[in-house]
Length: 95
Image 1 (cartoon, rainbow, N blue to C red):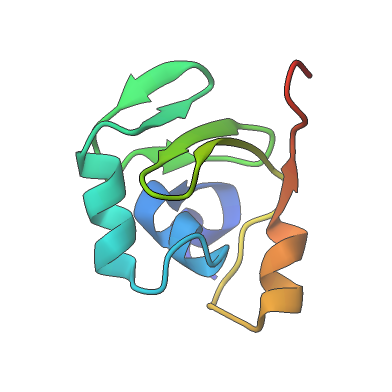
Image 2: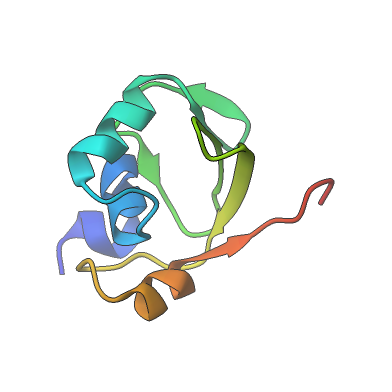
């Protein structure tokens, strides 16, 4: 496994592996649109580094609000939904 996949992962790649969007290009557009924060810092870079323990805040257009995800693991590939669900933990509102 490369250093990227072991220690960190590109934001767009992580979102795609976690099945936040259907296509990696959509994940990159979401990040480039400035609708994401990593550890409370606004980012508009699809290539931003994500590590285990980071908190990603997403303002999803058309999805009815904000989702907060804590990165629990990084993946080597985009697997089934059951595998994707183990990559993050949803942080409840106010938590």
